[in-house]
Length: 107
Image 1 (cartoon, helix red, strand yellow):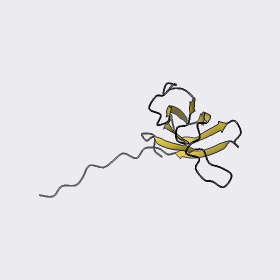
Image 2 (image 1 turned 90 degrees about the horizontal axis):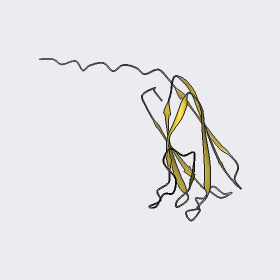
Image 3 (image 1 turned 180 degrees about the vertical axis):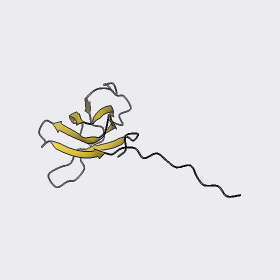
């Protein structure tokens, strides 16, 4: 991930066998640390009850989506917790942005 990118982190409620629980409406909490920040958190609920800037949301059809943006170069850690479930964590590494080169045109 570069410093100008964003990561879309899908959060699914699964059972002990890793099977998605589409009817689960589970409250989750997310924490972003390191070289990143939470840009938004939501489910696909047609009637959301929390703002996108919140760090908690209730899953809809068993899923939610977090958008994480880098704040600098280094590691980003995303921790998701829900009552009755083991915490889940993902780590991403942010690398310096590489300037794009203009295309070479021949005439």
